[in-house]
Amino acid sequence: TLRVMVLGDSSPVGLGLKDRTFAFPEVLTRLLAAALDPDVRVEMINASVTGYTSEQLARLYERELLRYEPDYVVVYCGNNDASVSGSWSDLDLLRSQRAAGLRRLLARSAAYRLLRDLLVRPVRDRGALGAPLVPRVSPERYAANLERIIRACRDDRTRVVLVAPPQRYLWPAGLQFKIFSHVTGEDGEFVFPPQLARLLDRPILYCLDGRRFSVTDTAVDHMTRAVYRSAASDPLDPAAAAAHWQEAAGLAPGDPVAANNLGVALWRNRAWSEADRAFAAARRRWAGQDAASAVERDAAGSPILFNRAINLLDSLADTSMVLALGSVPFVLLDSALQADWMSLRIKQPYLEALWALREKPGVTVVTVAEEFRANGGDGLFVDHCHPTRRGHEIIARALADVILRQERGGGE
Image (cartoon, rainbow, N blue to C red):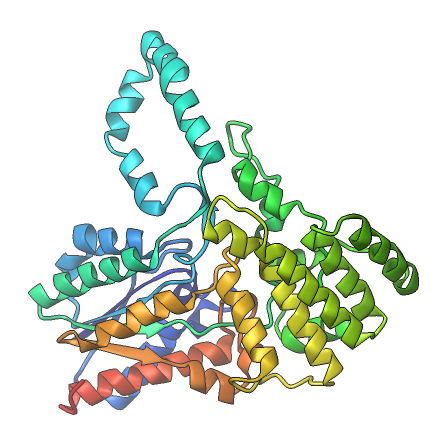
């Protein structure tokens, strides 16, 4: 038996696909079975969990999955790591869950509940309210978690294959979490802290239209539609909107949102050059604003970078699905991605941390970015990060090549 285990998030689960059998772990199983000797039984254990980061995956493997003794562990994560959900990292939250059983037992005591409400919650809430936004998992912690998995696998002589998640560029930066900004939990409290909700609730406009929506989303799912529709819309016609936002930008010379919205209004009028100047002014205003953290400042400015890129693409009449590496539109879209902590898309520091691990014994790093660019680019995603059926096939084939080469004695 050749046993392969996949540790990952919602992408290996197959989120966004019509049939889970199209997800790359299932496709990989079929590819290996077809290529290996008929006497070899291929066993796939898909231990991926939607929403997980490297923090949960490392613990899951150490505590629950070592006993399966896989021959290969494929790790696919990073999109959730490189996002924010508030002022607490995943590590902070996991630490806060210690002794949860004891706390539930004590919660039966009225005296304990009184002390908790008087002393613990106010301190926690005050800290969270004024604390800076942080990623769920920092790049340094991401690297450490992957190394934990690698160390555990080396003890069992299990080979590790790390997959660098492909990135989608034509996605509206800073918008994805907006549809959740007013969602409340069972306790009636909003799921996002005020400082994150304030960013999401800004009346910031986007360069979005039906043409690009239909071009870039070949398999649009309901989540993607909801994200696009959550963008603020300008009720004014293009000419009136340009005049309105020109006046607003003049009355609020330090407001990046007003300058951005002027740029969007000019983009609607196909005044590309004037729109670019407005977006450049918005970016300067954004860069000069104070923020509690670099993450918060970058997240606030990511829509401006996205809008400037779309305006430039439209001015060049570039409807290509594949953006040339190093081109100005690509650089702007990549900058928007790197600044966008409100969508689940892996960023460069995380990829660099992952690539650095290829020097470890028994570790192979698989990248599919070039294959994605050559075979449809953004058209290989159903939403912000989940691949289409074709995208999963590309990932599966890249993994099959690595595993088959090693099984046939070709080295790592």
